[in-house]
Length: 260
Ligand SMILES: [Zn+2]
Image 1: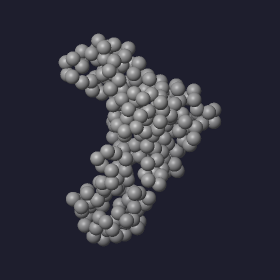
Image 2: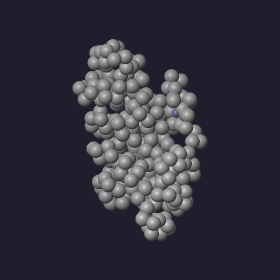
Image 3: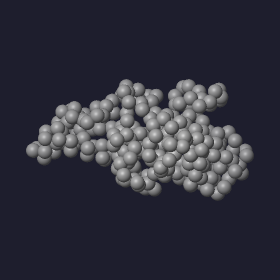
Image 4: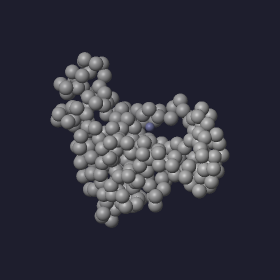
C-alpha cells in the first residue's frame, strides 16, 4: 500500500485510545461477517470476493480466516492476468487483475471510451469525470458501453475466481463490494462463467450468492473480530474483574487468537 508501508495502524490507534485494537483487511472482515451472519449459516468453508475500487478475496476455512504468513493471503488484486503494456496498475506493475477489472480500471476505460456512449460522454462533459454511481446508473439503463465494460471485467474476474475455487473447493462463494450497486448483471455473468470453468466436483453443491444487501458485512466482521479476542478466556480473565479492557491495551493484544 503506497504511503502506508510499515505503518502500524494498530499501534497508532492503541496509543490514541488506550484500548486494545485488532485489525484486518476489508475482504477478510467481510468474509468473516458473511460466514457468521449471511446465508447459508451452516459453517461451511467460504470464499468472499470483493469487487469495488480494488479487488480482493477472503477465505474462511473451518471457521478461521486464512491469512498466510504475511497477512497477504487473498490479496488477488495484483495477480498477473494480461501482458497488455497499457494495463498499468497503481502498484507500479502492469497486467494486474485490478488494472483490468477493478472499479478504478473500469472507470479509467469508461473515460477513455466515453465517446462511444452518449450517456457517459454527457457526464464527462458536465462534471469532468465519471464516478462509480454514474457507471452503475448507465449499466442499469442498458448503456451498451457501460454494460460491455462490466461484462469484460466480470469475465476476467470469473476466470481468476474459478481457479481459486478449483484450488480450495469451498462450499460457498459470496460476491460483495461496490460492484453490486451496478445491479445483478455482474453477478449473473460471473456465476455463469465460474460454473463453466469449475471442475464437476468443485461446482457440485457450490452456493454462489451476493453479499447481504445492507453492505454491513465488513463492520459485522470487525465487531466479531474484536468480540472474539476480548472474550477469549486468556484475555477475558485479565480485564473482567476491572470491568473494562481500557488501560491495558498492549497486554490484551498479546492474547490475540491468531492475528497479526
Ligand atoms: Zn498491481
